[in-house]
Image (tube, rainbow, N blue to C red):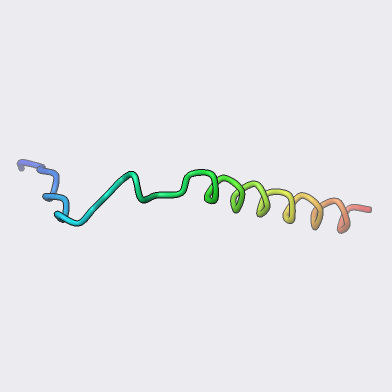
Length: 42
């Protein structure tokens, strides 16, 4: 069995991603979950 990567679409632009926004969303989610766990345990 031979595995191959599918071709990427032509319009894909990695520079269009927003890594700072993604990091802020992830950190916000971790903060909310941490606060929820702390409230449940308190």
